[in-house]
Length: 456
Image 1 (cartoon, rainbow, N blue to C red):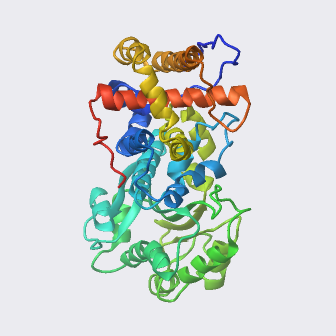
Image 2: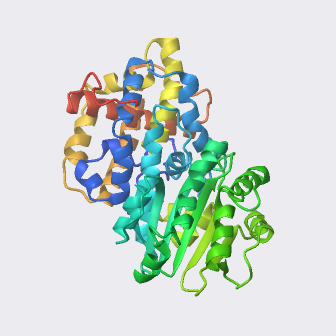
Image 3: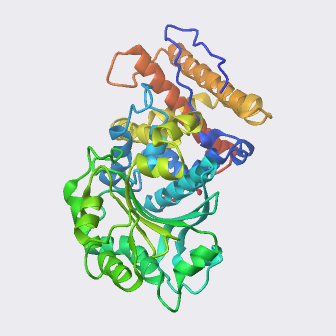
């Protein structure tokens, strides 16, 4: 991003925080940037809902449900900086699934697309499929005969083609009870059974395709407190429950015992497959993985329970923090900004009849400030870095314009319950962003009814 700075020219110190609002960005810039497009595709019908609430002073969902949306941002702030609200919060917000139910499906879709993008960009693996049936996954690998409609979250194949990975992904270690555990393990059970079944002979087919190793992984990204899961903060009881279910005679352990007894499978260190050994390995906080191999040592099968960064390091080759830091300049601020402003402004509307956002929007309609954005920024062919700089210059100018309007009218401009000038000016800038978004919706797009709003 360009290092060009802008100044406020007033008693307020200029902010070093650059806002990036995809809702106020020309479509061509979004479509030309994969990270922006991923974000935009998953929020384009949600942001108009916040704008509708800011315009009407009411909200169409229950506030106690809407409040859950912000939980992830508050808990995970400050991982990569000390901005007013860290830009990375938006991305954490998606990944942690802290959504009320009407917004929930957007999270899974965004997270899956984002992770698939990171995996391909990492160069270690190709994405064969996501949320795909086992039958379809193996068909795409050129392996037929697998009859299973069970879906697996991700299927990767290494760029060397010698390893494939079937990954079940869970955002939280709170994976539920027996039904949820069965959902995690049924794909693993199916693959292990198919290795030597006469009707499938999966082992032989894999070897003929050049596959030498198969990962059967369960990846759990976050703790119950929405922190990146590590060996130091995991819930021992939940891991024990999952491993105990894995070692049930009807599941993984029963199949491994049969592979050992009937087909000569051993652990990869050539020792015998032993229940206590496997269970201890999966429960070991420093390990949580087991490797078995066929009689001829031609194929290795890994059972893995991966925590947090282990998943990203294994299949992307980078930590989550590094991935977020790499993309932090193109993480859109739409979600946290419109959400926080909506929550604050609904209180204002209940007290004074309308929001600050609507009042500022209506006050500025008679000025030329909105047209300046449309004519000098929005509708000219700026590259992304120049657009962001010019947009943030406009925000500063808009905030100064609002101050001038109120000064000329002799009215006080009281925004927050604090006398901190910097905080008030930053909030005023955020109100200007929202007022501009109202203008784009109502006056530029001619959508006075906010018809693009879809909470679900």
